Length: 337
Image (cartoon, rainbow, N blue to C red; front, side, top):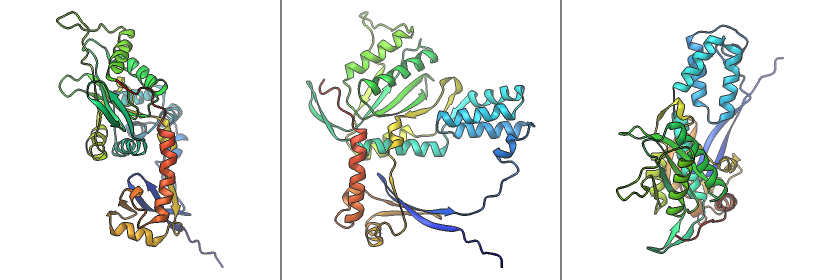
């Protein structure tokens, strides 16, 4: 008698800064290899325009340099030398954020803001402020080349990571009118404005940029801007949305966005069905906005505020929050300006 095969389908829940996400997990389903799958293409030495387009799309959808390097290595094995040059031309002609990358970038911005502890800093001019994250914009003089801007920006990322103790999310853009490359960053440690201005100018000059002077013969200081959001709502609805909007850049500009690796290391807790009290989930759903899909259900709420109706879930998330906050909130380097 032939055995009957039963695939396993179960529900899994994830506790995150956005709320509770429940989704179906499928295990045991046999997967059939498609004739155009990448594994089969690796064993063939044929090439056409469709294959180049397929590899190029995989490259653009990659989320990190390791995936991109793997796809380039596969292209070397699959393509002839002339076709490989065509592949390189197609991937470096332009790069853009796909919808998945945009959603991830927005989630990283809200995640950094949510788990970063509230700090205080003192300004001699305007008094004491509370601080969680800051939105930083860096531009450059018009005579700076793309290569000079990129080199200075890489050095600036290294500075805020090592010296200013910042965890960051960064993105490159072209100005709508000027078409000049500039940079946006969300950082979670305070840096005085004069330190940013001094360091950014110094890095650009080190790359050979001739710094413009004003009418008095003094260096201009208009190539940076720093904003401090006053609420999480402002971050979620303005900054995160602005940082994650779909965008394309010439290939010479390199990657569009980047972030600190520690954000990826802070993985949200996952639970299989029946591990979380169903009554508590229903209580949270009754008081929150619920988004339902075919395979995913998302409950929009702040899990730090549900302890009264869901003590178990609230305690689990509070422990996760404390662990992430401890990792993301590095010692403050600057305290006043």
